[in-house]
Length: 87
Image (cartoon, rainbow, N blue to C red; front, side, top):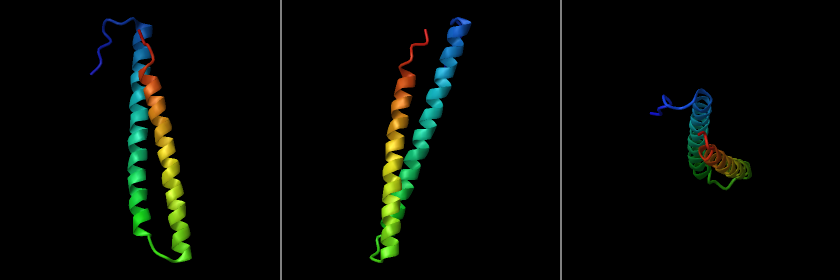
């Protein structure tokens, strides 16, 4: 995986923290992507014409949209964390 044997102790701690942050952000993005996929299936499954189901479909679409925005934000944080200079 990562080798910190030659790094100074402070740099190794920083590099380890960066590695853990990137891994956590990546996991969050994957979880959000899974939720979005599930919401897409639910939205398609509720494509009826009754008012109650239509309202639920709109709610699911809104939740899916907000999840997409959140995943995008997590990808940005992941990218920022990867660019941190730990040397």
